[in-house]
Structure formats: structure tokens, C-alpha cells
Length: 320
Ligand SMILES: Cc1cc2nc3c(=O)[nH]c(=O)nc-3n(C[C@H](O)[C@H](O)[C@H](O)COP(=O)(O)OP(=O)(O)OC[C@H]3O[C@@H](n4cnc5c(N)ncnc54)[C@H](O)[C@@H]3O)c2cc1C
Image 1: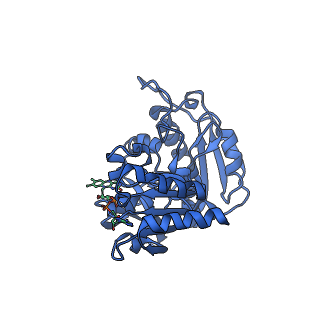
Image 2 (image 1 turned 45 degrees about the horizontal axis):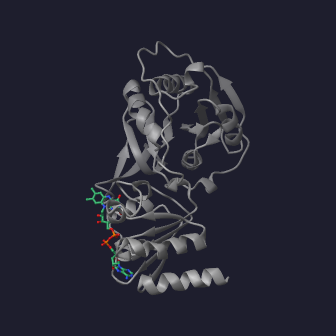
Image 3 (image 1 turned 30 degrees about the horizontal axis):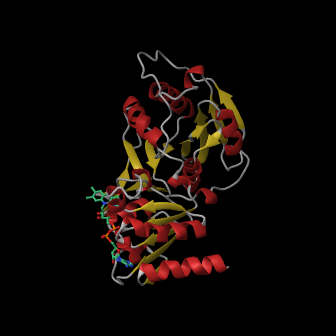
């Protein structure tokens, strides 16, 4: 039976939403699952992780891990990998793991497959899928079995709400960290958005595209977002025009989101936009062009003029 180590991410005791998605990915492999967590507040996060099906949850406790640095994180993870001897190491593809996962892979002399959309086991071992060329092609990867395969999991590739509940014992260990050497001094933790919006955690999103034509028309889309209790987002041209902040851009050069509901208003569905929102559970597209590519990704499509359709939906939502 394969051993799978999931490295969960947390901040101040609160689990990053993608940590549970990665636990769900780890559970799907069917082997023995170990979940490790580190940093200030890790003990609190471990209590939540203990409520999921896993062989154990390991808290890595060391003063050098209190405030995140890549150097200490890599040493602690190399230590726990040597101790637990997993066949597969899974991490959420967050800003933080983008910082340290390549360094961890280099330290272990192992390849890293980043931003994977699926992981599976067959008779030859782990099979990883990730997208290539902005989502135009899918690549299938195998890692040789001379050491652990290290894989980061794309936001929304697995569903956090499908992570199986269970009872996992929580243990705390003190990893041995060697000489940390000259290290970067951590500044303010990076926030996933400059303002209050964290689209990656939003349950509902209404996104505006170039179909709205001018900045003043954004009001129509804002009203729909308000009526749905949704966050506002946009395609790239809207943000490039300065009509919305860059932190609200969805797509390959913006945020990757996976809400329960994604309403695309006047968005054509270019691949660079689709890769950022295709993990949404339910996609509703409003577009006057019946051949717009967005309809290929949509669960519900409304062919019509957004200036008629959106106010009508808002009116109905307010009525009910
Ligand atoms: C390297 C690179 C990275 C990129 N990164 C991103 C990214 O992160 N995110 C992103 O979104 N794009 C990105 N793009 C741009 C992407 O290729 C598209 O140009 C962009 O997504 C198009 O935005 P849009 O759908 O809003 O506009 P358009 O393609 O112009 O589509 C507008 C749509 O509105 C519809 N429409 C017009 N009027 C109405 C109306 N009255 N009622 C209903 N529908 C109407 C039209 O039928 C059309 O389908 C990137 C491009 C490159 C090259």
C-alpha cells in the first residue's frame, strides 16, 4: 500500500481552503494518508485536520517555523519526509508552496509536478495530470519510484467538501533542523489580494467581460452580484482598462477560483479565462452570441443581450 503525505497549509490556526482539497486528493489515492502541518497556530489547524480520514496528523513544532521562511519549511519537510518515507507528497498549489516546493524538490533531488489537476494510482505507480500551454493541452506524467513524487494540486481540482470525514490521531514532533544559514527576513505575509476580496475563497462570483462595453455599465453587474451575495470579478480586458482592480481578474494571469456558482456576463470564454474558473461547481454564462466558447464550459447558458437579461434576473431575485 502506498504512503501519501499531504502538507497542509494554515495561517494562525485557520486552514487554507486548498488544504482540504489536497486532503481529498490524497484520500483519492487510497493508500495510507499522513497529514503534516507547521507554523504558528499549527496545533489548532491540526485539530480540524484530525476530523478527516487519515492515519495521523503530524504537527511539526519548532521555534524556527513560527514565522514562515522557505529555508526552515524545506528543512522541516525534508525531515518529516525522511521520517515518514512517503511514496507521494502532495501540497496545495498556493503562493507559499510556489515559494518553497521547488526548493524542497531540489533538496531531495526529486522532480516536482506543479499545479496538477488530477492524481491517480495504477499498477505502475502515480499518474499525474497537468495542463500545458495555458490549458490547450493536457500532459500525463509519471515519476520514477526511486523516491517520493512531489506534486502540487491546482485550486479547485478536488472538492474540499468531498474530503472524507474520520478521526485521525494528532501527534506533535520536533523536527531536527540543521544550520539554517543566511535566510531571507520575512516581511508582512503576502495576502492573496490587495483589498478585502479573496476570490479563491468566494462561494459565488459574478464576473464581467468586455460585453459590458463601458465602465458605467458595471453597475448592472454589481447589482446582480449584490442580489446573489456574490463577489465581483472580471476578465482581463476589464482589469486592463482599470475598470476593476487587478486582484479581481480571473484567468491564467489572474486568480484561479472555484466557487459554487460562477456567473460569466459578456465573457467570450477565451482559454486564458477558462483555466481560471473551470473548477467552479456551476457555471452560468450570459452571452448574446450562441457560438461563444464560454457555452462549452457552462452548465447553464442564457443566449441574450446582457442589458436585458441581467436586470430581469436581478428583478426576479429581489422579488423572491
Ligand atoms: C498571455 C495571456 C494571458 C491572458 N490572461 C488572461 C486572464 O488571466 N484572464 C482573462 O480573462 N483573459 C486573459 N487573457 C486574454 C484572453 O485571451 C481574452 O482576450 C479575454 O479573456 C477576453 O475577454 P472577454 O471575454 O471579456 O472579451 P471578448 O473576448 O471581447 O468577449 C466579449 C463577449 O461579450 C459578448 N457580448 C458583447 N455584447 C454583449 C451583450 N450586449 N450581451 C451579451 N453578451 C455580449 C460577445 O459575444 C463576446 O463573446 C490573456 C491573454 C494572453 C495572451
